[in-house]
Length: 501
Image (cartoon, rainbow, N blue to C red; front, side, top):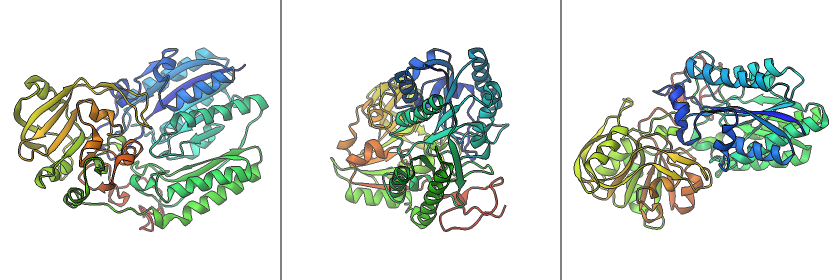
């Protein structure tokens, strides 16, 4: 039995987003458990589809003794503030020092964290952890599929494993795989051979979905290469909204035989490079998407409109109104949009009470260019306290605390309703709608503020999915960002122009 330190620090940073992640954002958690220190972190993540939960279960099943350090996660946003980073990382390192001696370390990381004072949040955290435990103690970590893998990360840990699904239905499973690599290193008393390689193009989030090509085929090839070479591989398509030098795609792997790891990495990288042209994805303007959805959507088989550029899972605040305006303008029938994050409007609805009709200026708080609050009269149809447990494949077991929620119906277009929440989270679970009385499958059109995660729970009921390009900070086309730090030569979209600085 080994003594293993456990910790987690997750944030996906869109450096072009309007709002930073302060310590309060980590206390809120954004749908994930809030900040926890020491022993309480085990109870906070238990039973949820979270990497740390999977790792904890696997390590306990292997008979190891676990020591909690720190756990923290916040909704994707702009940079993590210096104060929040130092407070959380500092407490993790302090508790790790107190726990010594330990035989190993497992960390639940994202891989795309940018702090106000460090472009590579995970690389710096791993450096500090390694400084405490020394070079001989094995360190393993799980990573998000949207990781921007770096040289400092590779140097800071002995093994990484990334998700293989987007939507991320395999988060707990990934944590367990990382734990098994750590257990293997402890039992053999030696490290694994590791290697990685980056790629030279970026692609928007919607085309990274593992339910569709090319990623569906890439991950199938990854598993075939694992069997062929007896290695563990990861492919991270990257988070193309972080203005840092090492933003982008990577392939990485670990195994007993260094030459086999290198060969597997080379083959996998070649497969991804060959698929570059297939990463291009059609985007629809709001009015065009609504018109098509009106023609095709029906109760039992709704058309899903993904409001990708205001995805709270990619740094948006979930408060832009471009798609809502199009639904009202086109007088759509059987249409529901959610979640629109507007704490003030939710409080106003609760104060007015169910059945009241009154004027609202919905959303638009982020002041995104081309966006504004949507003004109109709405009837308050249903109220909720925002406390419920998700049931879908990705967020299953997540205990949501979204504050005041309300279902509003437009007076100008009575067929259009909108679900309001007070705390931001992307619309990736049907329980977010059921909480205020909406059964998604009965609608004709579902407008979802999400890029891809919604597909796990909503695609099975959808007749069609259209990715909508409405105003928002999570741009679907990386060429539209104003880059300043990205390394030269990277193509800003599949088969697109190279960044020249």
